[in-house]
Length: 177
Image (cartoon, rainbow, N blue to C red):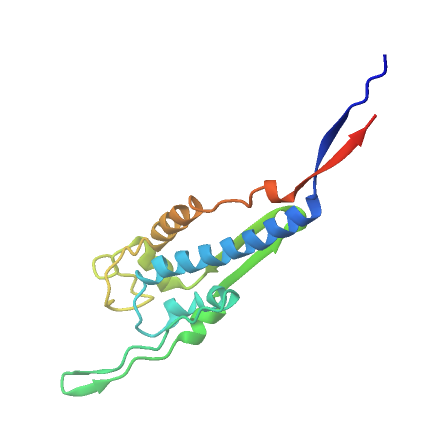
């Protein structure tokens, strides 16, 4: 007796899937940065512009404009006092980048600062626990807890990210024996 049969063998187009996955992950990281920055910047006031300027480098990575204009001056004891523009301090004392490397499966963003008063205000109420070497009074009392709020925003967004479906990249090829 002779039996002839045929069946289909599935094959995944791995290169096309990886390309789609890379595209999706780059979009997800950019959106994650946006969500993180939106949450963080809600906590950071603008005074001299330094603290908010620490986020410029990261914002530039996704084309986001970070408003950092120093606050306008005011009248105090009959004199007009202006704020010092310290945006340069914030820029020089910060890092911010998006690092996407499909070959290593790495999709991250990085923010860091060494700006003393932002670090102090992250953990302290400077009007109650002042650091005399840094400033006098602040317009928004800390602790800011911006890292925690940013992490929460990131996590909320990350939970919604879905990887591309594999099915569109699977082809069936007949196999005969």
